[in-house]
Length: 234
Image (cartoon, rainbow, N blue to C red; front, side, top):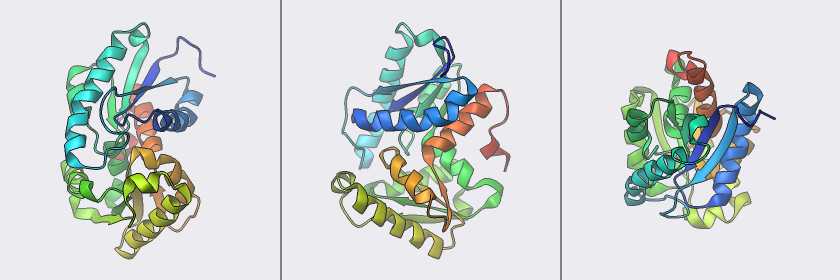
């Protein structure tokens, strides 16, 4: 276990579901704790339990910035060495990156850079149809539109699917296979609350599954060490 005075990576959950926060912290710890970094999760005070539409995504940016600022003003704020924004749309990431002198990484940013590395063709599998335009815009913002094969969706309402993990797994697997049929060489399972299912899908081996939380954790390790983020090297 890392020492209690170790630099801390804060994983901020833009959804209000604390179980999702705990899940993302657990995944981040697997990558960051061996490098001597502590991980702490914080959950926004307001908003939906799962962001499923553009209005909530836009509002989440302010909630994320507020949550991180409150944490930085608290008793462990001086130990923060990096921040991970744990929603695929990266709400508040740009604002925090401009305001803080520590690395701020979004799981959408990191997964897109990882999936598109070396010009690889990639797609996204997700459960949130109303966020397709937001996700496509994020791909464009990171200069990866030319190799993006598009978004493939599950068929069930995202909130209903979140309560049925076996069905979520099956439908996301089908969506990922559709991405492969589109020509994708890597598939992002797009969503912080989908992180556990992304790990399970990675074990199937039919395509490289890009997991957002591990991608962000690896990017943080590079940035904290002062190296160019591996995903950005191409």
